[in-house]
Image 1: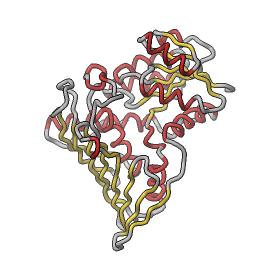
Image 2: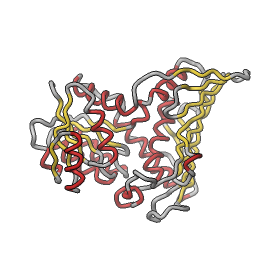
Image 3: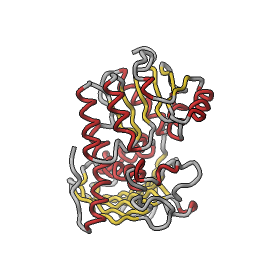
Image 4: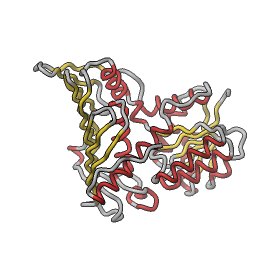
Length: 334
């Protein structure tokens, strides 16, 4: 491929974030934006000097578009992936891949059948602080990993957060389907293992959103390498107390990682001092999209696999079932 032409589906917050990255990459061009809202599509097209349409199917026959970037509400992913794959377009799809096992299985199968590269958009795997944390664990900095406490909390439905996230029809869930997917994937990524069981409690407690859409959740997970962890996700945390952070315990010490922070902290098990290890690297979104483009150019699978995308959602679905039944649940495997 020489210049890779991109068609973005969705002119919302994530579509804008992706377009801003493509603008900075050589050999990549956003050829068009598709959004059902004509005014929003026009505004986006003007800003990024591209074309616009209101029906994404108009992009699928274009020879100047080799890849589709899906930034749509969650339950619209399946149809968009099926259509794009059938048209021979490679795909970057924002997380979550979809909201049920069967819908994910259908979209993954059509991509395999059509030899399409589908990369799940798990941007947290590309945050430089998270990459450093993974490296330190792999190098034995904390000894043998034992447990992880992962926390993603914020005041949900704040300014800039699309209202569709509070509707079950389009979102397929709430904070768990939105940021719980990140949390589960972070646990799998850092601990280097697959989740065996999920025990969870979640519900809608404070926000004016659909009854089936949770605004708070707490999970305890066990992993197949003997480690375990907790995940707390919330849309009802006051802004000053919101955090995206983790603490990872090992036999030799603890790592503390905070999203968008310049250092990762290490404290030895029998020491009183904390070492601050500098973080280096480009932004997570830039690194994620660069990886997608590199995978297309090199005709290889992306570093974020279809299994990664599937299992992150499967962990969320296990949490929903656990919260309903009061029992630990084994996630369905890809």
